Image 1 (spheres, helix red, strand yellow):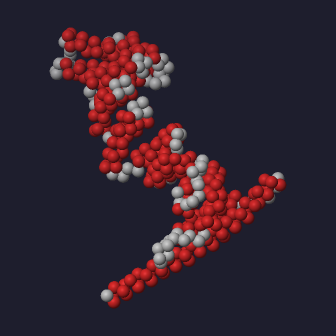
Image 2 (cartoon, helix red, strand yellow; image 1 turned 90 degrees about the vertical axis):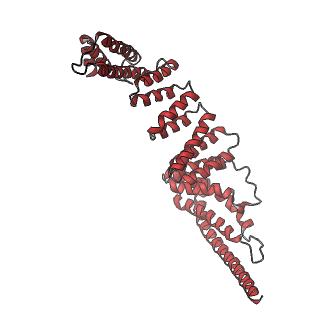
Length: 386
């Protein structure tokens, strides 16, 4: 019993000591706040006088904002210690009510500071510190009892904080502030959408393990299914599967099933199959894309080149093993494929006469050469070399 009483006394003593130390820390941070605020106010008075009296007295803008931001940080730190319960468990902040009005003004200074760092100094780290301080202070216990519901800048600067965090590669912070933006954006659908962009890219770039990547792709697929016309989700999936070639064909095949009118999906499926030298599959996929958009010149061209490659492979397969010659029937089979290739390549020429998108000249030279049309092959060889 005596030992237990001694333990209780020690615990009580430790609690009292901790509470006393917290009060001392609060006092020190309050003194620091006043020091920073005095320095801020001195410079700010010069700025105000310049505006009101049309003077041009020089002042240190960087010190103005640095002291303003540091003053707000010190106020919040003071309150953090000031709100520590005393030895009886009571919370009686000493400085809060007096410091709240000043802190409200300093939150606006933090916005101005972030703008100065971002636009004038191109210092994104300091801009993020200032703007995120403004956002975080909105939710701080320090402002208990103060109505900040009409804070018209909160959602917008939560977005800016998230954007800067992403640019600084602090992906956890980017997600945090993007979420805050979405929660506060209300009916502003564009702002919510922009914040959603940050969330997605932060999650993507923040992936560290295969499990992270799998979870991210699963989320993007869910978003894509819910919003099939949103190109950003499709493009993010494409970017991922471009780096995971073994899984790409299965994904894009699924995509053409889910969204059969997506010409890009068919085009990418065709390209994937063409790279695997699956000529018939590639041609069939490309033709689906052209059914949706007959003027899709890159795909029209790829049909032609795939047919040409198919003809070359068929010729090698059908040729006599000793002489390399083809029977008349087999030669006609190859020729039919080449003529179909020619039709699509001439269509590509019609759609893109200046070859801004595809180099149909060299492809047509190859086809005409294989068909034995010396005049046309020479004509397109000359064009190809220009």
